[in-house]
Length: 517
Image 1: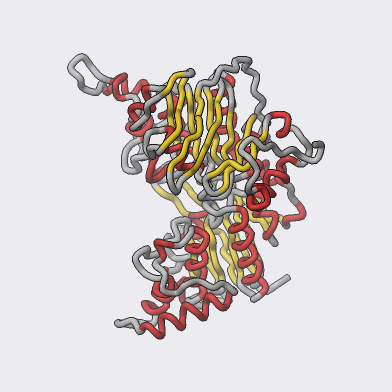
Image 2: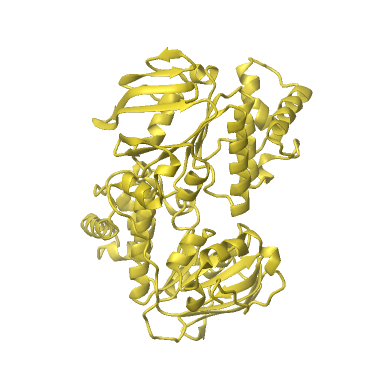
C-alpha cells in the first residue's frame, strides 16, 4: 500500500432536491492511477468538482496530504496540489504555447506584468519534464487536439500538481496520439504523481489503471484492481445490466444503390473518392483524424462543395449545393460536434428535437402549433429512449448520451433515406452507446443507407457491413462483409488506421483481410 494522498469520505451533495452523490468515498495514493468509471450522470464529474473546490458538499470530509477540510475553495485546492484538466481544456487560443503553460503560474504568483523570458523558462521546464518538444511561440489555435492536451498537462504541472484529474482526455485523439498521452500519464505516475483518469473507453481504463472506482446513480459500487474485472463485468457494475454490442449484418437484398459517389474531389480535403451505399448498408468511413472523412460528409450534405466528381441518388445526378438540397434528396447528417453543431444548448429538448420538422408543426395561419410540437417531441423522445421525458428541460442539462439521442432523433424524424453519422458515440457512456448502436441497426434493417464515421476499430467492426479506410484525403483500402467476419480483423483494422503509410499507394479498390485470409 502506498501513502494516501487524497482521502474523500462520506461525500454527499444535492441539486434541486436530487441527490447527485450519496455518501461516496475515494482514496488515491501517491504514484497511483485511479480510473473513475460509470455512466454519464453517475456523479464522477461532481466528485471532481467537489475535490477541486467548485462545489461545496453537504456532508463529508476531504483530506489532501494529511490536511483535512469540510469543503475547499478553488484556490485552496490548487494550493494543495489539485489540478483538473477538463474536456474543453480551457486554453486561450490567441495566446502562445508558452503563455498558456505559464499563465496560471503567473496569476498564482501575483505577477502584474509578464516577463517573456520567465514565461519561456516556465514553459520549457514543464515540456522538458514530460519529454515533449513544442514550438513555444506557436499560437495554441494552430495545435492539434493532442498537442493542446500536452499544453494543458504542462500548465497543471507548472502549478506543482500532486494529484491530476483528467476528464475524458482522449475523446478527440487518434490511436497514436492516445498511445503518446497514456505513456505520459504512466511516466507521471513513475514520478510519484497521483492521476485520476475519467474515460468511457474501457480499453484505456484497463491499460493504465491501478485501481478502478465505479459509480452508479450517485453511489459508489466499489473499488477494484484492473485484474479483477474484464469489459463485461465492468460494464455490468457500471450499468446494473449486461451490455452486449451485437454485430451488424445486412439482410436487405436490394443491390441498387441509394447513393453513388463517383471520383469526388475537393482541393486540400479529399481526392478521387468513389463508393456506393445500398438500402441496409452501414458503410464505415475510418482513418486517422484529418483523413478527409468529415469533409466528405459535409460535401454530401451541401456544406463543402466538391471541385469535381458526381453524386447520384437513385442513379440520377444530384445537385447538392446546400443542406436544403440534401434534405430534399433524403440525406441527413448527425455532425461531429453535437454541442456546437447539433444542438441549441439553451433551448428545450422540445425545441431541439422538432427543429428539423417545423413544416409539420404549422397551422393554416403559418404559425407553429404548440399542441403539434408537444406531441411530436414527446413521440420522438420516447422512441429514442431519452431518459429525461420532460421535453421542457434545457438540452444542456442532459447527459452526453441523452443529448446525442436528441440529435439523432431530430434527424430520424425527417425520415431520411441516407443517414450520415459523424463520430456518433464520442464522449458517450457504454449504456447509451449500446442503445444508439441498436437504433442504428434497426434503421439500416428498415432500408436506410447509413454512412458511419469513426476512428475506433471496435466500433467500426461491430456496426458496419462494409468499410473504407482513408488517409490524407485518399481511400487506401476497403473491406467487405466477408472480410469483417475474419478472425483478428479488429486488430488488423487498428494496424491499418494507426500505420496508414504501410498501405499508401494501394489502389482504392484494394482489400485487406484478417488472419484467415
